Image 1 (cartoon, rainbow, N blue to C red):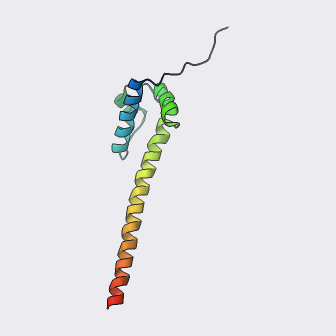
Image 2: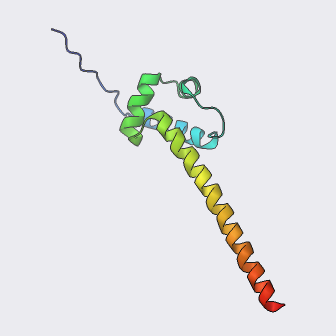
Image 3: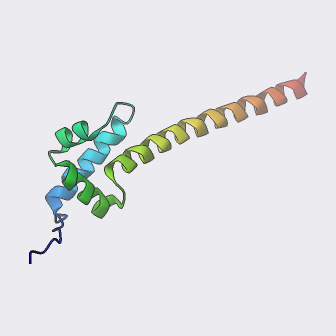
Length: 99
C-alpha cells in the first residue's frame, strides 16, 4: 500500500526570499489583474508550491493575500479621505467662528 501523504516544500532561506519578493511585488501591483498565471510567472513556483509556501509563511492562500493587500490599500485610502474630510469640516467650523 502506497502512502498518499503529500510532502511539504521546505521553507528554505531561498524560498522565503523569493516569497517575500513576490509579496512585495503583489503589494506594488495590487491594482493590476493578479491571477495564478501572473503569480507563477513572477515567482517561478507552481500553483501548488505557492499555496504550500503561502500557508507556511503567511498562513493564508496566495489569493487571500492579494485580497488582504487590496483591502488594506483601499482601507488606507478611505482613512486618508476620511481624515482629510474631517480636517476640512473642522477648518470650516473655525472659519465660521471667526466670521
